[in-house]
Length: 486
Ligand SMILES: Cc1ncc(COP(=O)(O)O)c(C=O)c1O
Image 1: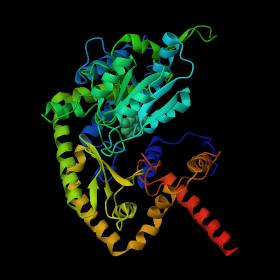
Image 2: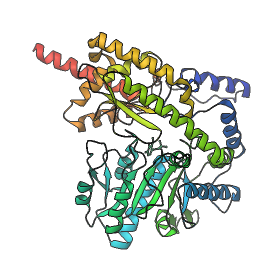
Image 3: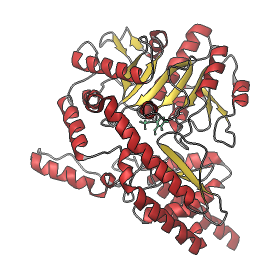
Image 4: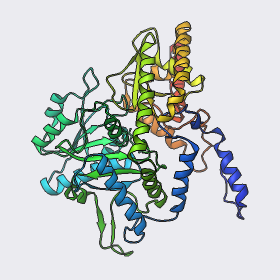
């Protein structure tokens, strides 16, 4: 519905009340029923990051020479990050607006480096199928072709196949610590050896793990090496707005040396507005996000983050044990860090139907595809809801066993059918069509009643796309039925 700007400004109280009212139908993340979208701990921490953000909400990090405060905070955040990632003093980097920006920047950097140093004209990047969707976005945006490495049965990439994909157009190799779909840490040491031998940069996507795996290791947990201690690793992305518990809009991209980071920079000297240079994707950069990111690293310090890592791992271990104890369910692969996924190993137990039952019980459970599963991105906050989650999961499984028809209804039916739509390009086309429709001028209010946008495969909650796809699948099956009737 088209809504014009008010002719006259409105009183602050009225606006604040309205803003609060807007929240009414949002996910209730404070009670620990939401996973992956929000990293909430408690009101004290929440108020602290809001206050830090507030103090710099108007300041702009566009020009590092102007707001020296922001540049100082950025430098300190980067050196704190390099510290926990075991970087040498040469490790340098930039604070970005989020994991996606960090991933995009790595692809731009290595594409431009290969162009400049090796005259590569048709750049390619090699990554496991489980790499985050941000890398697929980067590939589209920057014209770098993806060469996908298939997984072995243990959910780790097949390194023999990886080696075969390397050619003179390869500009980078990517590994994750951990990957989003199943929480597996890719074999970074072995990948580092390959990368070094072939003289190809290796980026580690630690957007999820960067601010928790180091603290788990400091707590004495056994952990494969994946950071700057691995010689072949040339850069790492690590998000502060995930397990760093900063305000939204803060990630880091660091490089082993400035020789790599230089290729991330942009400059244009002939613009009538003046000579312009920038270090990452954004122009104006939000001072508030920098301040909250800096503030939170000081607020927790290593000991605070170690405690959070301890609580998170306790929750993860209890959840994994509880899921494994339920007949018919299995944890996928061998996840090490804060997240894991589980699937059904019983053909009569449809995992998506279990997900639907969990949604009905008030949880916002994310779905995986290829293979079908449910996802849990666990935070310290979830420790207090573990028992409730497992009780409800037991109830959900029992409900699906008692009524197998549930597999043919709701989200389960959608996902089931979608997995069998042979033309994947059609699915993409439909999603793009329907997604764009929501942004038509004055476009209808989005129905966010069941929570977040996004959806299938790496999706954050059953949301908009799922409902759009349900409509699509419904239409397809109606058409098929009509055809059958002649
Ligand atoms: C491994 C990984 N990389 C990158 C991203 C993208 O991060 P953001 O959502 O902050 O853009 C995510 C998000 O979940 C992720 O899990």
